[in-house]
Image (tube, rainbow, N blue to C red; front, top):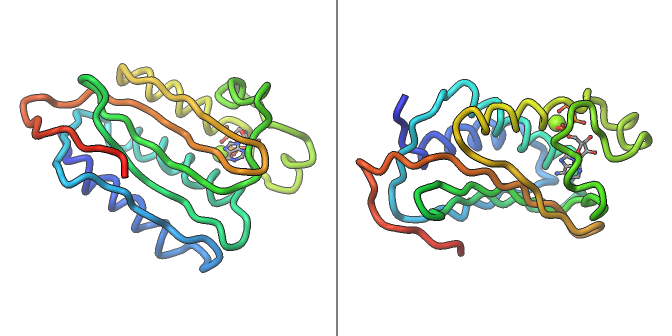
Length: 161
Ligand code: ATP
Ligand code: MG
């Protein structure tokens, strides 16, 4: 389906915002411009659900989760950023591997299978996009992914806040 990414992303964030605890605050850093993407909405919803669930799961009390997107070439670049415990530099590249979890203690206390991001990578790559993360231990994590823009409806480039 061809969807207006701005409202598609808003609806997903709204759903989490209704059920989240007040210990985490959401911040939407959205551009003014409208961006259209041609995606399998169920699959991309699953990708974003996992990234947001992780961000909430690893956020401290009083943490902020920031949501944004911008244009990079002919791709839409989406970012979801948290103030959580972060991931050691040497492990950041591995979180998209099947069953990979950063440490056993974290895995035991947090639940989950370690498949979420591996599935996310498969789905994003099937759309012709890429997914990656940047993280600073003790500071937080930002997950980025790209999706091909539907340039027929291209408007103007937005910028990060
Ligand atoms: P599942 O998603 O299958 O329920 P999971 O959340 O453990 O389990 P992934 O979503 O694939 O698995 O994430 C893999 C690992 O990457 C996590 O176990 C965690 O160690 C680390 N990780 C992912 N997102 C974050 C984040 N925002 N902050 C800190 N660590 C993260
Ligand atoms: Mg997960």
